[in-house]
Image (cartoon, rainbow, N blue to C red; front, side, top):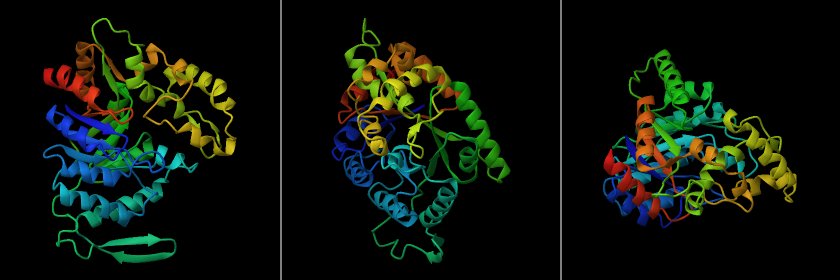
Length: 357
């Protein structure tokens, strides 16, 4: 099992990336949400300059927020700083789009963007379409130190539905997912491998990255302690605030069945009573996304929600769950950093979990 540390891109994260490298983490991942965090590629550039071995990837770069040539150019620039250590994770934009009140990118848009990006990153010419205009494009000075397309850049895709999973099997080199249900993970991997086979691709082993969070409980510590809430609360509450339809500006039917009742309570008592006008409510919805709990959110956290959504428990309990997830097909556990201080989660998982596996 590989372990990643996942940053809400803060520009000085390079200090923590180096620490993660020293504690045995194999990957550093960075969110791309332009209205919430620092620029993802500027953050990665600094991390590249201050690390030696750890792999660096977007988790995920939002297709539709940047045109495909710009995305390819940005990740190829990072690859010049960290040759062969770079991964491009892409997705439709749950937060990166919704934080502007915009719907996620459509699969048709994603397909075109991915096809263009993959060709450019192979040093090939790509057919780029913008509106009614189609043009052939290529990197003009790719061997002069500006970018690096010599060392391969794998492309991973985030997906959580049948059509998107099929696209992973057809086009991507790896899968990014969320949720800690082994059966859900197994079903997704089987679907992606079947899609790959249907498209003439051999995907016997699928590199699967799971975005989660966690907290190693100290002896006698309660799962609802202030320290635990501070470290994993923003990740756990995500299961409730993802259930929001930005197109209709109202709650949607997307909460996992296990927390459906709690999600309904969250919406009726919190979201629907926000003072922010409905036309701007998406801003308040995402203000603390994966970084902090907003005022009043802690009351919706329960031990069951934390256990369902995060890797929280004693070292032995976490190690057992890690092995279960590995058996289900997870290759990389990407642990979310809540806020701008990753040192505690790096230290506790490095010492109590990674070192003991």
